[in-house]
Length: 552
Image (cartoon, rainbow, N blue to C red; front, top):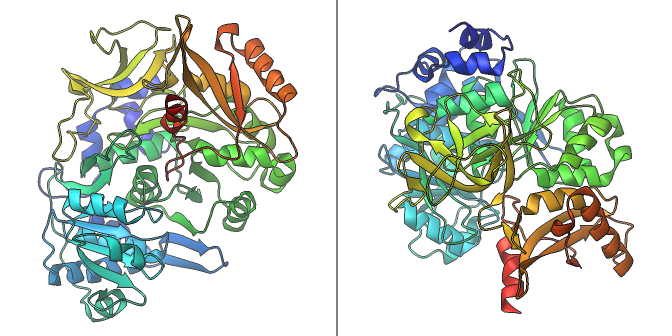
């Protein structure tokens, strides 16, 4: 276990050495204070065991008005115990779901950790959801309580069969007054021990092509979350860490909350809208050195230009990107304008991050590739129909070999059939290619792949070529039905400020793709739009763009 111990001692071993000696069970025993065999509690792992030092910071918080606060692990532990007693008084039992419709405020961590301390399951509700989205998720999970704040409380008025409600600030008649209940609750609450297979989070997929599906995340997933934070994000004790992602979604809840707190590291929450100026200000004011987020945000930073980034250049040590493939042009721009490496990471709500370019392990980084499997995951490329494993440079479905992947914790959708399990494989639904060095390059979602004149064209490649043009801020590429070619490539383009749409510009973009990519892959149609349809977590909804052409 020399390579594994090197990591735990702060060394940076070679990726292949670490993987060769990796032992998931041994790592779990080393990094957990509890035991996955019936004696583990997420609040203990993510808070209590770090609370012996009364000055150890768990949270740096700031809002759009410039208000700031810090919360220690010790204070957070006391607040979590109080909220666990509130839950117990309301009849919430171990294993019950407690939903949080909350912005990025300090009370969010109290609710999450208090839920865990009581042995219950925390369920995030994104604050941009409307009543129907909330109603579906609360009904499907059978949530026993929803905690919200005054700004979001009105959304629950139209939720049919809404669970009991606890409100932070200005509760309505019939609501629990969060502050009053917390004031009278005891700080004495023994953490409820659970098994590693028991759930501690209840997630729902984004549901871009159907109703969202529930994912019960077991406590043993904390070990995989640690791996991602330690190996891929390379979170170090002297880092100031900020994950821009909202904790209402998997990447934010897994890696802006659970991951850093598990490591005893402070997290940063900014309660405000994303803006370029605001992002740079938080980085400078808080001395952020380790940044994580989604390509959507990074493309907006790039679109603002080098001048806006000048004061931040050299301040960031490493940057991690997840949620969508990272365009090579963004990688080059971060190196040039911000002086830091930005690595692409791939994962899903169903399994967390699984294929990454690891900041904390030494290996070759293939530009534009998603990276190498996280230790504990064996990943391959298969033919979706035959399940035959495919050689390098052959597009197929990315698949996790379940029997060889102790870090893979997904056991199936909540009270639904899981059609993505086929034999020993979990099929991700994403089309990729295996590279010669063992890394994986993203081609597209299997339903996003464009078939034109016999060619299979990945939208990501076309989008990456288009975004290299100085005028392009964002773009999405889809296949449009065509009687002659089956489909043609169609691009929707958002221009940067200062550029105007024109036929000449459209032709310039077509020629760029022909030159940079391939003649058969250029967009025969280009539509200039003000914005692209996205999920609340920032992923482009290409299926909505395809529907426009299907309905035409």
